[in-house]
Image 1 (tube, helix red, strand yellow):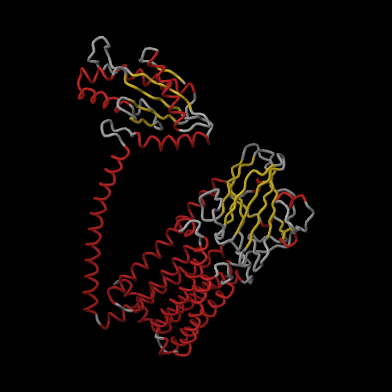
Image 2 (cartoon, rainbow, N blue to C red):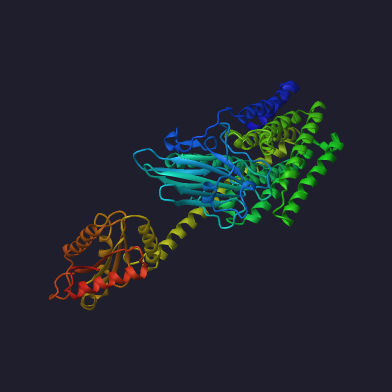
Length: 632
């Protein structure tokens, strides 16, 4: 708090000229983002029949310069199959520039995109097709293999699509694709906007490794961005709780509305918070946008005292804020409505009125208004690029798609500085009371952190104990029968996806009843515990898992195991038990041994069928004399 206040003191000392310089920051950011928003153009049309994926440079390439497009009103009715679109003489239009991202603007018609690819390399190539825009209402992708004459992959996603076919768990469409040497495929993409407002379509082909690295980096970047907004939100909520000053509370509402809107806008809400709730997602997107405009106006009123300084502009702001909130009601009544067509215009008008009001207040000598102008200039830069793309005034370049995030980050930092100036004003008036309050808040935070840390540690220990009790056998420490079904189901599913089957060993201690009867239950428990200790690496592989499924029955899952490996593992387990030399209380028996039934999974196996085969093999091992391995 003292550091932030020191910034405000510096601003105050710098005078009006220094404060005005801050407003130029917004203009500089605006010009920078406008440069980013206008990628280089070229007049050369790329009309290559098929594109060799060896063109992938740096791990990815944009597909728009290599594509051709078709407006759906040129498709005959009833519409043919996707394959017929490629085989029918239709007015496909080649792309006539090198801009990377499709922009279809406001159009009630669907659009089709076609790209032909081939792979001339010597080895299979793992690729990922990405449509990096989570707000597309409805997008379908088909991949057609020319050589085999079949569809080899498809996906269907969108923020209006219930039960989306997500090939990868990602916030926007990402379709894995493997091309074999000499293979030629056709990518066919259909995009449709329910309300007629097409979002930009950044269609990109990645090498798989590069895509996953990019996705991880993007996740870290968004995590840092949302984390910073979350810290600012919590900080200002605490300030409002301590001071009861309206600007802090309204800034927190504004920031919270923006955070929720951005999570929805970037597709994270539909992926994680309310999966498949597409109707609610549309309502939330418009509702949070309207909340941003309303709270932005309220925050400016209180921070700059606009009702007193510029009453007629404040009244105009109130009308625009109500118009924005009316869109939230509109989308709730009609989730299919094209609300953004007018809400975007309301937002632009709101920005203009806010900047004009702040400028009037700044000329009246209020230094905090100059900081506010710089903050709004940063946001206006990002939002201006965003709206210009929506209204088709600018071509949607790759960096321009992030303009809103960049501009909002600058705005929130500068608004935090404006609030710091406000803090300095309050501190000058009530320095002693503010100091006591901050000390109290600090102590409360420390006590809360200590209590949370203690309770978290207690809960962690309790959860660990409960988890172990629920999943492990208390005598041997191995996984229990309850856990077996879950793991066996998972491993069978994985075995069906991979070439190597799942190996299963069923073990039963020989002559265990006489051992218990003559040696006592204590000795029987001792043998069971020792066997549990034995069924770990190095006897088993690190990927193998052992379970106690009955009194003296044990089971081992051995993923990725062939017949030879299963035979080796089963014999190693049997020999290891025999080599322990655990004496049997019945002298005629001699030593404790184990019988093993072994089997490999089949593609159609269920837990019951593979378990039954292993049990049958174990029965055969017992019948043949015990202390041996039998195979189903």
